Length: 250
Ligand code: PEP
Image (tube, rainbow, N blue to C red; front, side, top):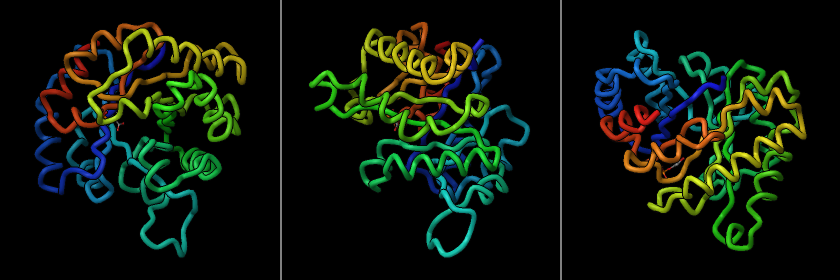
């Protein structure tokens, strides 16, 4: 059975105090009834404190980005080893905001994937089409190409450390959500692309999350779809009650 995951991408929100406050509120929640791995991705500056704070909790920590190099003259960047050393388990790679605002190319993302795996970091690899591509009915080929260029240089055995997050860009932070049927249709397609590239086992075992304005009032319907294995949550992950409600939607 695939791991079901709900991950909160805090983006550039929460200073240290706010971060600790949110984590304390999350630690009060009883997630044991949901068969879900819960992950939070605070900003870099709060990762070590989050690791300390979550020591006795099952909640896992992700970074929102990673640099592809080992070390050296890369001012302002954070290496895989640095992330590992502060208790990070997952890294988000290829979020649409990094692709669009910071011009991260597929080629760069492929290097980040390699670097993360080398340091035993698990990856949440984000893919998804923009509105024009959806309107032109190109979303199936767009996600396939993103996978081919950013991820498919890795071998089948490394796929056990990869989670895919399908996030239609038109649904991120907009209040628009893909319908459960739209999510299912493209998740099924992604699974088929994985089967064609690797094998049926990899396709069956890889968790594919949906992201894009998931809220407590729509999570249940989306998560109920056969090929949706959880969610990557932005805005709603900043409120402990909303995030917990989404986790408990399973
Ligand atoms: C995201 O940024 O990954 C995301 C899904 O954001 P939101 O839930 O706010 O749409």
